[in-house]
Amino acid sequence: MSSQTHERFNSFAEFYPFYLQEHSNDICRRLHYVGSLLVLSILGYAIATQQWALLWLLPVAGYGFAWVGHFVFEKNRPATFQYPLYSFLGDWVMLKDAFTGRIRF
Image (cartoon, rainbow, N blue to C red; front, side, top):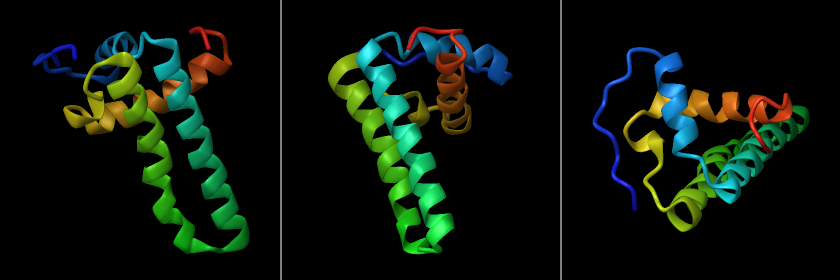
């Protein structure tokens, strides 16, 4: 597993290039996309049906797929362990960037 940087980031703009570097493996990145899209689907379904008990699945779907990607394919520790807020934001920005063609899907 790659070593985690001990660098401190002062902004998300500084953090995001590091975040993308930690997601260079295509399968890892795609597993993040699956997890994020499942989160949106579960959230939408729970709201539409008012089945609030389903909300416990959100972290399971979101983090489960991502962490498999990191430990099995990327061979590194998820950035969320050291940078939880920036990493959470990074998931959504990376998904947006993939859909808009800014980064490869």
